Length: 128
Image 1 (cartoon, rainbow, N blue to C red):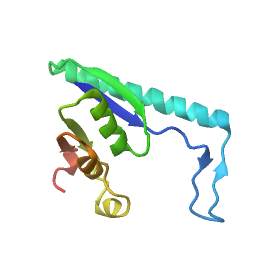
Image 2 (cartoon, rainbow, N blue to C red):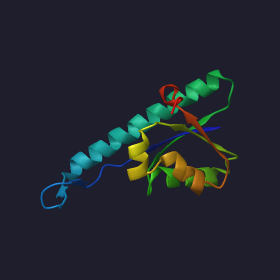
Image 3 (cartoon, one colour):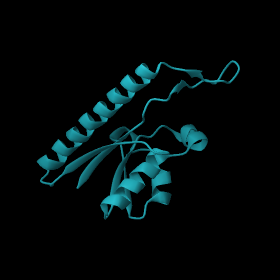
Image 4 (tube, rainbow, N blue to C red):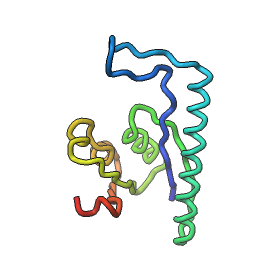
């Protein structure tokens, strides 16, 4: 079993949705620091997930991988590279409007993955 966390490297610009529509560049050192922090946090999350899986009796390895194009593609590619028999992914439940506007990572993963995908809702999301 692989417990994987996908993290997003810092953008070299600050996203903007107002004004002239142009993104402002950020300090490269700051972008590097933010990327390192994101990667470290992803590794911590993967290790925590692995501890839970080990406590349940699974042999586990971890993977903290930077996002390539989007999370669904990154996870599907990782699963294909590792020869995964299945993917288990959590559903955050951002709501229907978020899904309509931006789409759902789990829905994209269901379309993209070359193996079965099990989507597990969060406890608070189960009634959706």
